[in-house]
Image (cartoon, rainbow, N blue to C red; front, side, top):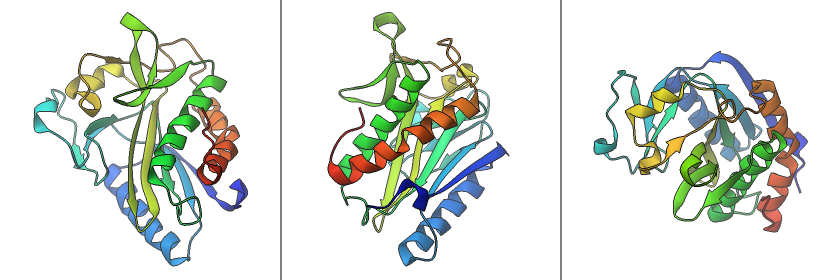
Length: 220
């Protein structure tokens, strides 16, 4: 089994333009497939923008603030990225890590849930709904999103966790095509919304995530 230490962790300060990130992801995935680069976990933030997945429906985009919209090439529908949101891009070689896309997505959800639990946020999956959810009944809201692509068994894109973004920015879309529910954040829930704390929680639960890919054991 490959150790977590074999994977590069990169944390970018500032806001990374989305086209730059997309180009770098594509290049890194090719290099990982060719065996000329290490796998990568890349943690970053973007300026305010919307991304359109391969199933995006223009009826779900209103964009009153005029944020740029980018074709992402990943699965899913419209998502928002912006300051105060931790975005994680994963360039992992599934040929070495189980070669099971369903397991990868399920384990990625479990990793996010485990990291949020370390920060005192109770989060979960909801059957029939994409993403990670928190709260009950009238207070139920989405706190994390997932959108991935797998190319020649190398993963691209990944996840986002709402740490302390401007939640009004989500009003420009129906997030992931799921109407009738709000969005929330770690800050809104009154938990530790330090980006460093979020990154530490992700790192501490990462080994269990990797193990679940190979062993079929779910993180949460």
